[in-house]
Length: 266
Image: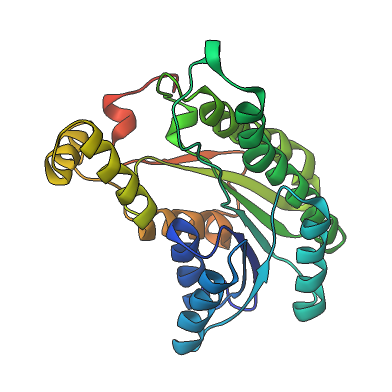
């Protein structure tokens, strides 16, 4: 097992990609701490993990709240005595498009507050625990939206691009303590939330969900979207000793979206 006896915090752990990461990591021997704002979804993930003889706990935490972040770390240490891996998977996705010319300031700052500042604040508290032990792995979940952004999504794109830059800078700081920092950038991923959003968008465009999704998949080299489990196994690689020489990197998991839409990469 690649994460035997490791303790992992996973934010946004109650649904979608976070749920998949928690499930995969627990199956690889980790004690997982799933964090988020909804105790019901978090508890359901832990029940599923325990049913398969895995280990973990659920802790309610809003990553935009520094006091709740500190409580998350303190509870984890109280329960397990260490933190080996942090997966910053939390995200704020604006529900509406917004042109820069018309953008309310709070619309802009909310995404940065959760996606970027929240990532920094939680990482700050976790590496305080990792540095004395001279070991640790940080895995940040960004998005290809930060690399190849769409118009009217500048707030989201900026926060996701910022995560990639933060990861690279962090890796240079903490490498001396044998702590690695890497990033995973998925493209469209078949979570329940994503599919619900795409169904609503299809309706706006007067298309069936199937027709809209089929059209979307033409933008992907593999002609399909990413599965949550595929993002989870990419995160597992970066979190584990299999990636012991990998730090400061951004691993794109996109079913080839970047092949057909290279954007700013390279």
